[in-house]
Length: 375
Image (cartoon, rainbow, N blue to C red; front, top):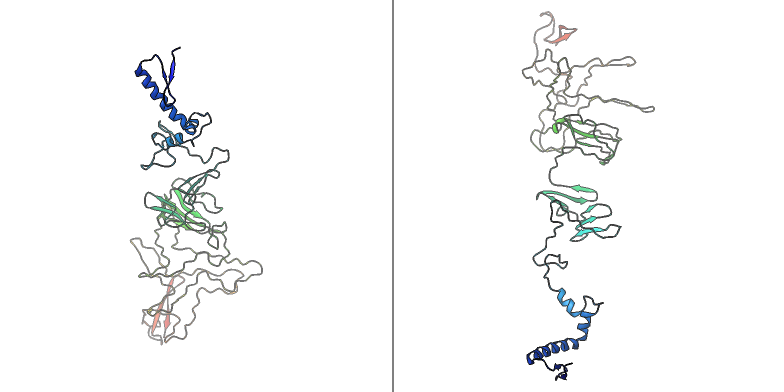
């Protein structure tokens, strides 16, 4: 074996080798001696049980030289995560690998949470600045407990069911129920009252309004409030009656049939099919003419054979003590009080000049023209 000699500093020189090689070997030996002097660093690097806490490993972890991986601490330029490379691949985020699901939270649990246990999307923040913003302008948000609000419009091509109400039954071809719900006396949806807006071909303006069911309140349909516009009109019915089927038909501009049905032990002291009030408030303005009922013609090219402003049919029936077609009470308290007024008169003496009558009223009695004299 080639002899060896000790080199100053602890490293040894190998005898019999070229001096250039000895110089290189000595340099390598000096580097190894320096590493061995830092025993903690070397043991952390070489020990089979080393962890990321060692000085050499921890220093290398600070390097962000693998940008193909997500950096949990974040990157200054932001990051994009791709679930796959092929068409239709997905990216699935799970709250936990455990069998009991957790939530996926974005930002914080008070802003956005996907509950893995219930499948709910949770947006806990309330108010118009929270909720959902769809398409940049449509808002949906929570304004109060159990109240979902939007300042925008809603258009439906299907149905809305509320409370215990089932799907609408009028789903034949061409019929669409835009809204069908049940409202109780306290404004909540219940099964004892109903509101149904039905639109033919989804056009609500050409549809109908149906109120059905039983309610305990006094009013079935109540219209309240104040109308401040010109020529105010609380109820406006402008409907064209145009049956498509051939034959004879009957038509009603309005049909009211409120049935008085008191149960045993109850009595209606008065029952009114229709009651019209001439009502005025306490405003500072004035009312010139007030009409409890005003009937005027509005004929088109189609003219009726006979026209009746008011027609009172037979109101009598067996077991009724008294039946009166028309009752007029004499007004009192006014400057001028009359039972009835005829704007125009006929000054012809119905007695042919032999009586004291100053005029006559034309009447149709039993289908024959007759006159009532006035004095």
